[in-house]
Length: 306
Image 1 (cartoon, rainbow, N blue to C red):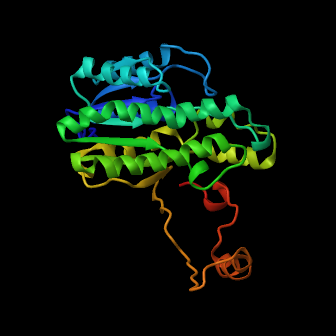
Image 2: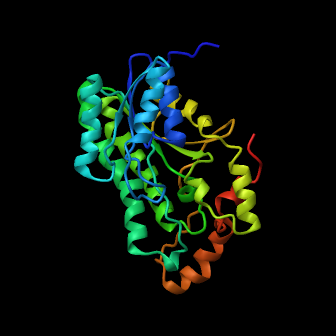
């Protein structure tokens, strides 16, 4: 079946597009008619090193298949280099229509052993970098009166996971960043959404198979291939989703999921004001039936992907 040209004429930037989910998004966007800037620093899953080969390879594959792509090798994790990514797209294609913030790194460490470097590097890429790239694109979107952001968040932040305080904090921050962009840029017809992807990538592959729970987790993850994420991304940046903004989605094999967002669920009032003692004796017992347990992602997604 011929591929739909739902993104015909659009220019899409995909960060972290040299491998895994990002590469599949870039390839499908090109197949759907977009001109694609394939951005990847070419670093390792933990953030070290740099290599132009991954981004160049994906761009070459797209062009060889009859699509239109150009590589970009700048890091998202600094203000100036993020601006350079946007300029690469402008120089190559003359405009930008969508930014897919996909680049990411992992440094999983149990919280009480996490170093400042573990925290800083993960935050710099997974949160700061998303802000820098989005901020660099914003004036162009504002000027043309259109644009779409898709940011990769994670159930690590939305729900929770062991040994990922740095990654979870950054990815929950991404959800807040996306919502703020959606609110602030609505007047300019610019939209912003998140996706929490489920896919087996080199980052997920860093999970050690050191116990039965992790071994089972890895076996299930291997069934969730990266190309399953791309259709949701391409749909969200298309004109068909022009009225969709400020939402948090997930893609899990053949499931598309919409996440809830925090809202008040219980209140307690008193005309006399609260004291620490009455908080303990009245408020907390009243609210306790509605408390959330210390779930991790696998406790919530209890069914196998299909």
